[in-house]
Image 1: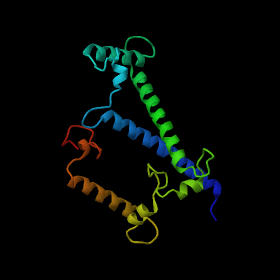
Image 2 (image 1 turned 60 degrees about the vertical axis):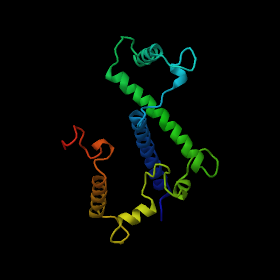
Image 3 (image 1 turned 180 degrees about the horizontal axis):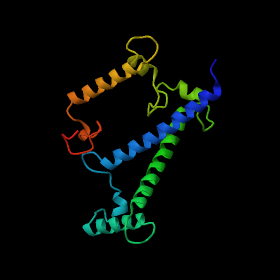
Image 4 (image 1 turned 90 degrees about the horizontal axis):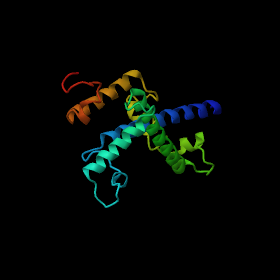
Length: 185
């Protein structure tokens, strides 16, 4: 028999982990900015609202951004102030993401997700897919014994690494643990 408290507790822990991971990934994706760089808030930079951004406006906007980071007003940005900015940004994104999940998955309209609502979602904690979906579980369980062994999980990781290798280094070569210059693993 399933212990409802354990199921709800496990679901809540998984949700918290997923929200944290999702916010961190979203923050990283925003900082990386794709091919055109991060999205700029044109209206915030265009101080005179003439539909054009001058170098002077960019300089003033950057100065305002720096001043906003400088919580202690000493004219310098410390690691703590930068960390606080990243925490605020990640928290805002996590809250937005949580609101979106509630809107998508809350079938009874109570503003909260029950274990049943999470379980009924086709991808678990969609859109993050934090848990193992049935389909993913079946793919990992290669010997079809109804359980995933450490060897099956290791083999799946190896297959994923091989696929990434076949596509080149991918994503700047920074997702295999080599956080140094390319080629230095």
